[in-house]
Length: 120
Image (cartoon, rainbow, N blue to C red; front, side, top):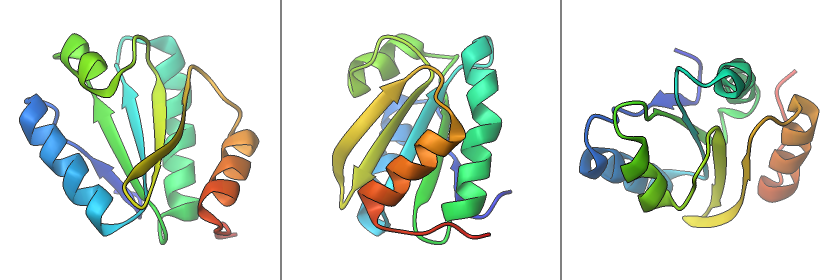
């Protein structure tokens, strides 16, 4: 497993919500909602893993594969499309983006939101 990367069991919304709540209490977090059947999600997943490797000392990277129950997660976290990344700082949502994004753009967002630097 990549440093800083946590794959959340999404078999139940309550269980996933508890895992997210626990992570948000411990550390700043970025949550990645995706589905295996989504081509944009498959493009973003390795980028998310790369970000976890670069910034995982300072930020939790939570990966949530939601194919089993996309409507419940979409309703609970207020999104209609995947992939979605939600950036939390001190437990509060700072921003989110849907769809594909370039890794350099995401690195700059992380540096700006969390005031951290990446590992080389």
